[in-house]
Length: 183
Image (cartoon, rainbow, N blue to C red; front, side, top):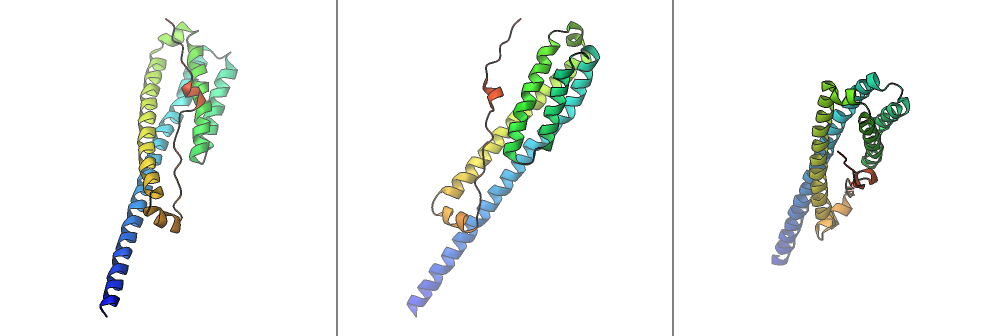
């Protein structure tokens, strides 16, 4: 009879441990979802700002249609991207297009002096910083979640309930290239 009590006590301890691990994995997954939504919120701000930038530039450089169209097309692809990896890839294209737009603006002194354009540029700069911080936070949460999910013995619970690994948001090729600044 004492052996039966020991087995029951052991089973209860294992069940409590499994529930605790499962709950912590759920909390971390929810935190990762929240962090991903934070990145999305910053990206939406960026997407909302792009048409204003294009319209401002269009007034000064309407004959630069290919550059303006590239920005609009890149924004559309980024907005329509569904998965995290698709969004990261689409963001790479938008970043390249925006960099070309700002390089174009260098050729138009009146545009550079335009207060509305300067304000939009400053606002975009702040949004870019917010995106960077949100990505860092997401990656930190994803790392914690992945660590918890992969480390034994919690990996047993994670595999039993089919928890999926979170992908990191990494810098794309456009963000890794060196930027030449000339005065």
